[in-house]
Amino acid sequence: MDRLRIDKWLWAARFYKTRSLAAEDLGRGRVHVNGQEAKASREVKVGDTVEIRTPPAPRTVQVLGISGQRGPAPVAQQLYAETEESRLRREAAIEQRRHEPALAMTQGRPTKRDRRELDEQRHAWDDRWSAKH
Image (cartoon, helix red, strand yellow):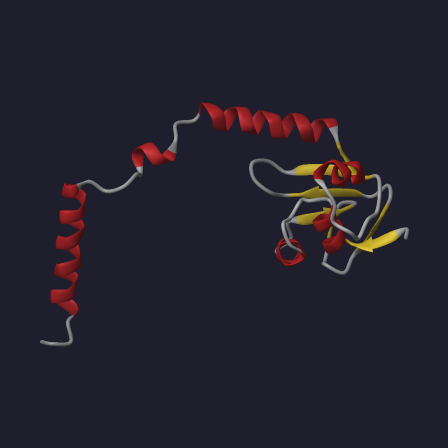
């Protein structure tokens, strides 16, 4: 086997948990093969460059092997080699996120006062737009 559909390869290389998730991102234009936007049916071969735009940073990988069968992670990692530039960009993005304050600290569970304010707003809305009046 020297060629394989990109959605199968992304799934086998463990970039996505399911083929349908891979196909969904392909449909949204988040995956490029050799600089061109790819559809799920696009075939990849050894030597192709695949760019996958997922958080925290885009990844650019070189296809080293073809497998239509999903295996353990160490085997899947042998199917591709991430470019040095991509690896540095991804590590920098991870490091930057590590130093940002957590959103959960400012947007956590509402306090009792916050809940009361939300209830007041909800009741004001219901009184204004109720079908009862």
